[in-house]
Length: 118
Image (cartoon, rainbow, N blue to C red; front, side, top):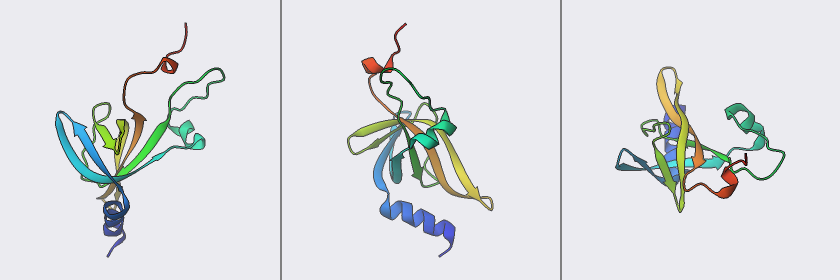
């Protein structure tokens, strides 16, 4: 088994079960979703706030390359949590799609802490 097939099998076997909701249709798949740590947030537009709380945690999603994701449209549901796709790209090796990665934000109603005072 080549490295590309091994990555696909690893995502399928060990990834969490997810549902992707986009344009009214739902697709079930497997993916890894994990929080981005502070050092990684710098590279994806994260901001450091000195005062108060501001809910802006970002998450990384790694899924199979055939998983269709749309920025600011696709919602990923895993267990009892929902995330919206903010950025996504397919990673290629030798012109072969290996996996899709996405930056996610929690999806839902805005909390009071999500707004900065004037």
